[in-house]
Image (cartoon, rainbow, N blue to C red):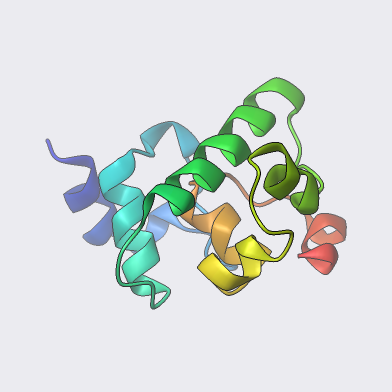
Length: 108
């Protein structure tokens, strides 16, 4: 069964803040769907670089990174996340990562 169809057919896959409840369901198709829902028309190579960095950091440390470090590590402009995704919160959502918690969301 197509995971994107499962998610689009049920609101139960996102929490009240719009974060994916079950990050293990994430795939690139779901990322494109969430991006489109957030008003992003196309995910470029720069988007995917940020998405993969966020996911890798989360897998290794279990928390959101300092977002400007993601930009620096990938040789991108320090404001690229806001320019590409409109906000850090959107980047986190498109990356399919779970709700980072109230404190982390205040910094996003």
